[in-house]
Length: 432
Image 1 (cartoon, helix red, strand yellow):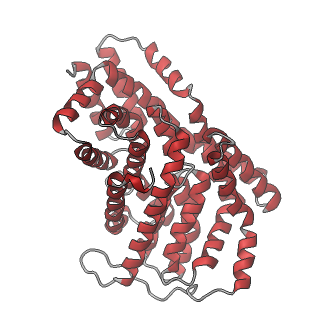
Image 2 (cartoon, rainbow, N blue to C red):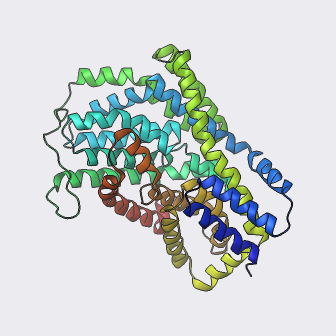
Image 3 (cartoon, rainbow, N blue to C red):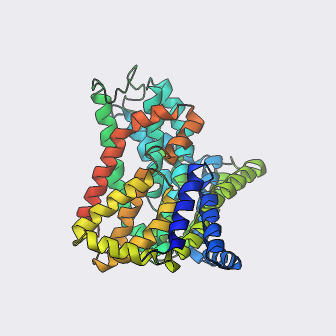
């Protein structure tokens, strides 16, 4: 049975978030209030914070952020975009396809959705406006494409899931890839359908003022030149993913390799990294990774309090009494994750909610890696849903398109993402 401590913990968290406190601070303040009310020792918080950071896989997070920033400052992301443009410019609505493919390529190096959104979006958004795309449509494509950053391995959310549940990060990276490719194709299909069906009223009206100027077939000579220019950029996913899948290095070592490789290419091959841009990349990566790690640390304290107050046991009992089959349980977690994604970040969902549901999933005989893939797919859909869709706010930051406009434009992609998630949920034999 849930005690008063657990009730206080949950109510305090809701109150602090409702008054606008940052997520990590809301979690910590709720934890402090519960510990003080139940007569606990405050030094326990320090111990739990230390325990949260004493975890080797977590080292991958700052290095993935650093690799992504070095790629952005070193010109790798721009060359990826140029190659995708040369390869796909013959497609009607090619800029939408190029955005998705470029995000997938960049995500295969950075492991971060927000870094992918910014790195590719800052290049593609102005070009889409020049090609005549309506601003809201062009902006929402950057937000949607950025979510592929955690679905194409390496993935920071895969690392967090492995840490939270004790599952193999390597297996997560292996099996998230097909789901990520399927999601990319679904988003591309929706983007092209919206362009072709722009007469749909009262739902979504993308406006393309003129045909893509890049829609004509490019000469093989230019394609070859862009491929050669992007060779070192395109080689990085091969080195990183090949190293993981061949067992040459662990996911954490992979993040370090990605960082070193990005610095070497940006400094000595493309020669766009200098002391000033390198320092800027390091500073931005520190800020980005700190935002994730501080939530992980706070969530570790929160999860411990949930456990000692029997919340995990109560949740397991409640779910077991509500659903009786793996099929109904999987449907339930999709609903729970979707609702959670509307209010909290994916990192919070994975570090707080997933540990409560994971034992129940195992009791139903659900493969931990399958459960992890479903979890992460729901988390990335959550970054696109109001009121706190992180991808939408990141996108509005550099596009200056109002969030309300992005919310109106994003729903078709949210729905196709949910359909893809259900396919992954109930047809795991496609990749497991």
